[in-house]
Image (cartoon, rainbow, N blue to C red):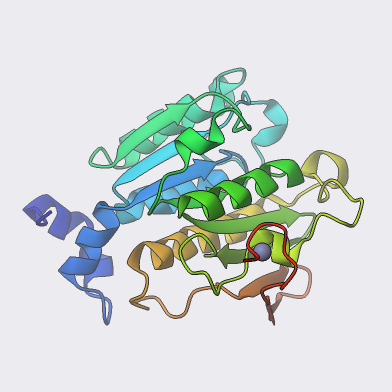
Amino acid sequence: MALHDDDLYRYARQLILRDMTDAHQEQLQSSQVLLVGAGGLGAPALAYMVAAGIGQITIVDGDTVDLTNLNRQICFATDDIGAPKASTAAAWARRLNPSVSITAIDAWLDNGNADAMINKGMIVADATDQAAARRLINQTCHNNGAAMVFAGASRFEGQIASFRSGVDKDAPCFECLFPDISGVSDLPRCSEVGILGPITGILGAMMAMEVMRQCLYPDMVFGHDLSGKMLMYDGLDHYMQTIAVNKRPDCVVCHG
Ligand SMILES: [Zn+2]
C-alpha cells in the first residue's frame, strides 16, 4: 500500500522521526487493532492510534456514555450522554482521520464472540477494567495468534505491558503475571476507588505507543516494546518503574 500525497502531509511530523520510514507508515496503515473498551484508557489510546494512521480499528464496548465518564473519556461530549460508547467513539474518530477504517461493535466482548473478533496477526488493546475480560482476551490472543497490549489505571497510578505468547512461544502471557489463583476477581475499579482523568490520559497514550510498537514489530522504531516487562506509573511521585515479567512454567494458558 503506497503512501498518497495526503498521507505524506498528514503524517509528516512522524515520518521525519529518526528511523521512521515510509515503509513503517505503510505497515501502520495495514495493521489491524481491536480496541476492547472505549473508556478512560480506550479514548486517548484511540485518539493517538487513529491520528497515527493505524489502518483498521475495531472498537468493542457494550456500555453507554454516563456523565461521570466525562472527566477522562475524551472522545465523548456532554450531549453524548446515554449514547452507545463504541459507535459514538467511532464517529468521533472518523472525524479525526477519515482514512482509517473504523468499525464499532456496541456489545461486550464475551465467551460467545471473542473468538470471532480476535484474529491471527491482530493487535488487541485491552482497555477494559475487569479481570474476567482481560483473561478472556489473553486466552483468545494466545489461541488465535494475536498480540495483546494491556493497560490499567486507578486512583493516581497505572500499569502497562505487552503479551506476545500468541505470536512467540517463549513470551509470557497475562496469566503468567496475574495467575488466577489469588481469589481476587477484579482489579480496583474507577467507580469504587476513583481516578484522576490525566492518569488515564498518560496510560492511554502509552498504550497507543505500545500498540504502534507491536504494529512495527520486530523493528524497534520507537524503542523497545514492553513484552516480558511491565511498566508501572505512580502519578503522585511522577515515578516510573519497569519490572520483569517471566513466563511461568506452570501457566494454565501458555504452558506447553
Ligand atoms: Zn502464561
